[in-house]
Each structure stands twice: as C-alpha cells, then as structure tokens.
Image 1 (cartoon, helix red, strand yellow):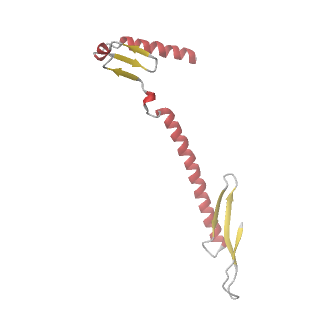
Image 2 (cartoon, one colour):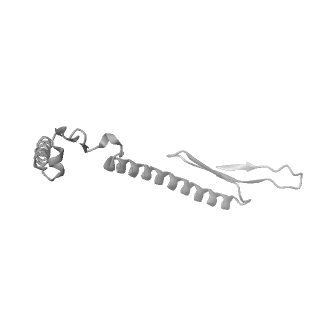
Image 3 (cartoon, one colour):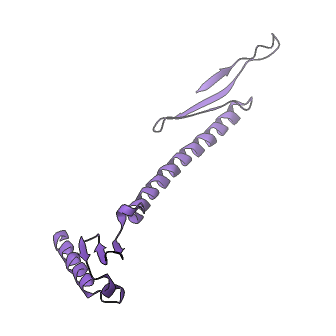
Length: 132
C-alpha cells in the first residue's frame, strides 16, 4: 500500500507519494517506511524490516518451545521434586518416588542399600508392565 506524504511548504513544493505500509496477513505484522523520497527504496526497506520482524517472531516461538521442553526434561528444581530425604534426627530415609520409608538410616549410610534398590527395581518393573 502506498501512503500519501503531503508537504505544506508552498506552491513550489512537489507532493510525493513515497511512504509504504506492508502487512503480513498470516501474522498481522505491519511495517511502515517513509525514510526516502523514493517509493522503490521505501518498499525495499519495508520488505527488509517485515522479513526481520517475521524472523524474530518465529525465533521467539522456537525459543519458547525449547524452553518448555527443557523445563519438562529438567523440572522446576523446587523441593516438591525431591527424590529422597535423609532425616538424621529420626534415623529415617524416605524415597519419595515410590513412597518407601525405612528406619535404618545408619545401615543405609554404611552401604546396606539392598532393600532400597530391590524396592526400586520392583517398582520400575511394575511401571514398565503397565506401560506395555
């Protein structure tokens, strides 16, 4: 679309219709350019600006999608995503993934984790059975 640019400088001044407005219909992005007195230069500049804005918008969408995927993979990192709690005053270990609480913290800290590992293996096997 060509816009009119009127100058109120007197009778000797010529009117130029050189301003350009481009609209990208799928995204609704609008760009105007009236930097030059040449319509061709303004149109070329407006096309360049429009391409840049569309590219920026697509990059923003892509970055947002990647951030969401990363958040799903990593998680939020808050305390609600804890895996295991070692409570030394009570001598207890709780694995929050499977809901197992053991009251033999000293043995677990010395390396006797067979009960914990066996329960995790059983829970993992049960999950894989339900997924098939």
